[in-house]
Image (cartoon, rainbow, N blue to C red; front, side):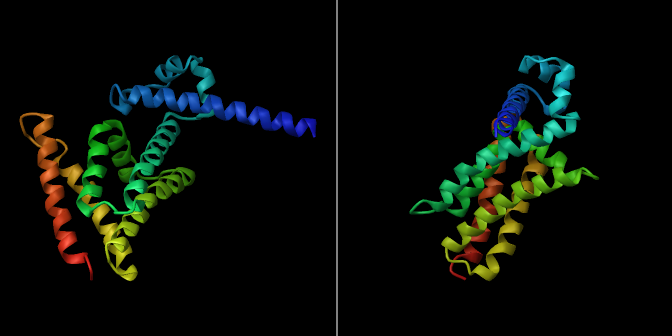
Length: 205
């Protein structure tokens, strides 16, 4: 019994240290692109030795994956609230919130596109990434149903719409306009047009 409690405490301490490493990585990602952040730099931010960090994350890639998954999982709570409130958000409100989050969190967007495009992801990482992306498919599907879309259509429309938003971001993220504000405004216009097309075609069908 005592050994079991000790093992449980030891595991909790390990997870706490692991979380400190992830938080340190996210703090650095907020300052510069994730691909410019090295393991030694994360270790310094976390207050541990470079050798110690590999006890928790065998590779830099695994740390990036875990940091991305936690960031998106945390953000999904706000989207869930938008869907479940008494008067649910409109399609446009959900879409603008989605793209704004990725625009304002550059490293999250970079890691998302990296994971979407990279070949040969480890099964564990692929499974976690799939579970995170499924959260947004599920939430938007629920939103469509609350706005009157039939259940048998909602899933396919959700997959199509979220993929459209990701494509809009990838297409216009580095659009040759004068500044980031102009780019963000342009993306918002395209997102609003796309949202209106879905709203006009889907609501009450």
